[in-house]
Length: 245
Ligand code: ADP
Ligand code: MG
Image (cartoon, rainbow, N blue to C red; front, side, top):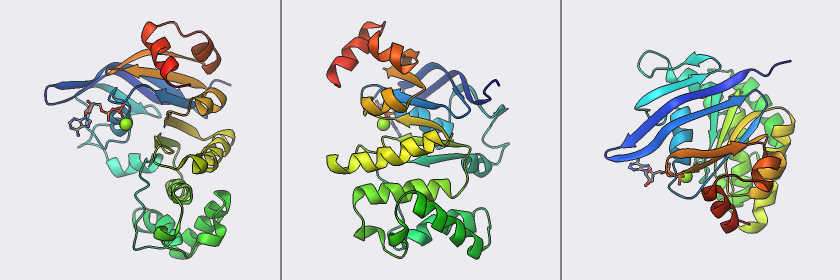
């Protein structure tokens, strides 16, 4: 069966003032695929993710989410954010809420799900990310890896169709990276559609279905991981891969 197009980007451009940050970006993300977005710092990866989630407004071009072009102002952006969840480098958990309260916050307040139901669902998600025993703990008591797994559970609580990850392991101590990548890999195997900005090349190689390399606001090269990593075609890609082994 043909995979549905979950995200389609055509000719996307975005500037901050005089700084042209995204240049004629074309990209697609198919259902259940994991697209890994790689590239040097400042190449526009975060801006691209933020445009997909309408945290930033594009200047021109097209972004279709599940076939629908979304125009801020004419569409309900919150509805799109329900479909497109996001996990950030710095977690952004609510510090004054317990883990469980963090996870049920959006479902109960944004989606108006009855609290008892939201709690039941949150418990399932916390079990899934291996944190059942932390439900009543405050974020300050958690390790970075645990915080990020809570952030993933919180994103999943909205039942998104697509999850965006912006360097989810970059703020973690090295020994905590593995547990977060393992959780992400599990989601990928369950068929979650994911776009992952990462510097973890072994994750991209192993879990990614498609690699997109950005440099200076452009998609320089993309392809399936085997081909991309073993036979990069562009000089910039080769240079980048040499710096990241
Ligand atoms: P990456 O995530 O690949 O490191 P970013 O998308 O964060 O790249 O940034 C791309 C460029 O846009 C960088 O030059 C950065 O300094 C600039 N930039 C990012 N966000 C803003 C902003 N809110 N205002 C102005 N410039 C920004
Ligand atoms: Mg970034």
